[in-house]
Every structure is written in structure tokens, then in C-alpha cells.
Amino acid sequence: MAKFLKPNKVAIITRGRQAGKKVVIIKAFDEGTKSHPFGHALVVGIERAPRRVTRAHTEKQIARRTKIKPFIKRVNYSHFMPTRYNFDHDGLKSIVSLETLDEPSKRKDAKKAISKIFDDQYLSGNNQWFFKKLAF
Image 1 (tube, helix red, strand yellow):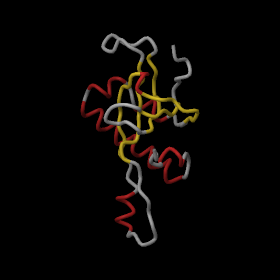
Image 2: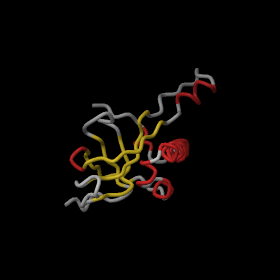
Image 3: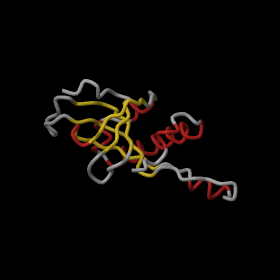
Image 4: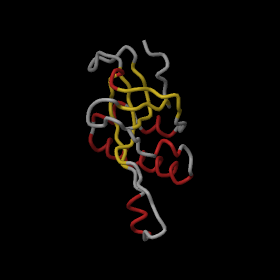
């Protein structure tokens, strides 16, 4: 059905708790799986984006305001809107898999690793549009 939903493609969640959040597609399941018999994708997104920083902020405030909180989720194709943008990073594929969703300790470790990758990308200035909150 959706051949354009490829890994590293950026999408926006349209329904549910994470509605309006940007995500990166890690793996697409066009035919579905046994447990989820519909087209869906494994995605990684930003639950809490970094906030604005000014010169008046202290280093502690800056560290707190630039933290990124990620999430890992399976999303039905009908619940997100793909964009034309890509977020290229090979480390995400190696960290996130279906097994990380099942076990809480693996999920927690994966979130920490994803947060580090997102922090590095944010601080280096790459893909700045990805880390800004949507205004709609």
C-alpha cells in the first residue's frame, strides 16, 4: 500500500496521546504482523521538545531546558501524516527493534540512547526544524 513510508522518513502523529508530535520511521510493516494485523510502523519521536534559551538563563536552567524526551511506539499508517523530510542517522536502527518494545528495561535503555542521539543532533545544529514544536 504505502511504498513511500520508508525508514528515516519524518512523519507527524495525528491521533492519540502523541498527536502533533514529529516522529522518525524506523521500520515499516506494510502487511502487518501476527500481533498487529494492519499496516503500521515502528517510530521514534520527541515527546518533549527543547525550549527557548536566553542569555539570562544559568547553565543549570539551560541544561534543563534543552533536554529532549523521546518515545518509542508502533503507529497505524492511518494515524500519521508523512512529510517530505528525512532524518538520517544509522544509530537509531541499531537501537530500536520490536524486542525493545516488549521488555521495559530494554525500552528504558533504548530511550536513553535515543535521547543522546537527539541531543547530539540538536546541539550540532543539524535538522533544527525537527526539534521545534509545531504551531498549529
